[in-house]
Length: 72
Image 1 (cartoon, rainbow, N blue to C red):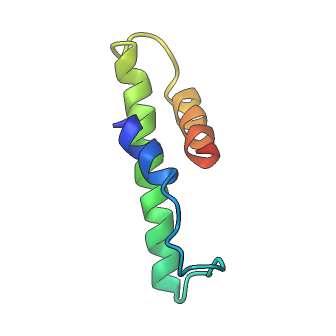
Image 2 (tube, rainbow, N blue to C red; image 1 turned 120 degrees about the horizontal axis):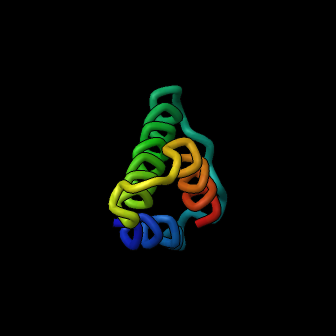
């Protein structure tokens, strides 16, 4: 799943979108935050799953997942 997240984050914009646009409405901005939250949630889950949910700290998993999502 992390590969899918990374692939989505590395997707290049279409050639017609030369400038970055801000969300056109509060609803668009909220959807973007919801998408990010879901990606972080999934990345944190897979971090814990990779160690078979043994040991670790959910907060540390979440923070590491946020960094991973934001940097990709």
